[in-house]
Image 1 (cartoon, rainbow, N blue to C red):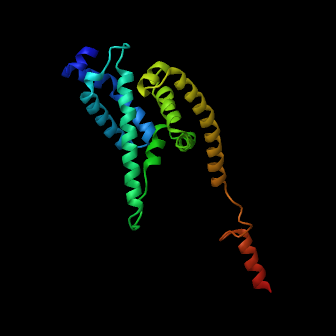
Image 2: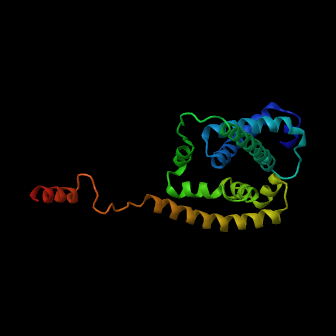
Image 3: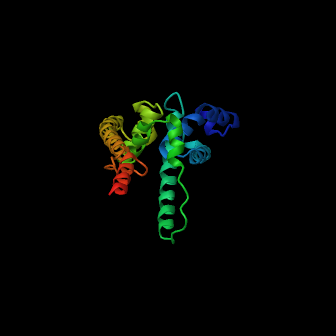
Length: 208
């Protein structure tokens, strides 16, 4: 399979896409929080895989670590491009703001408050921790596969994942508390429009 990919065998690439496109897509959705952007990531990843096919080595039974390494690099590059675009937009005069549906799209994955809090917390992790967590936990790669994908030692993957789990749990709990505190109903001290307090005050005023 590896030799056929390096040789540019179209059927081998169709098989590669068939077996791993969904994995790359899920990883991209969870990393970007945007279904449409994830589709672009899949396309760019397999275009890069075709361009870099001769660099695929024979180590391992599957090309999955090699392919996910390409996906990680594509996500890094597109992330930098998005940040440059956002900075450029920030320098432009303000116009009517359109709603951002990214959070809504992510919420459809599990439709849970916990996922929304975890997504916010993930953005606060260091890049290396975020990438290791996404590969090992969300995409199901083993330590060795993630190490190959990121080009780092297995020990680095283990330590980053351990730190990421600890920090993410703490950050997510804090984000959930913040969200729930923000949405708690606030007692208006009787100043409810059309409520009993207003009605009682109106009766008192009429009898004065």
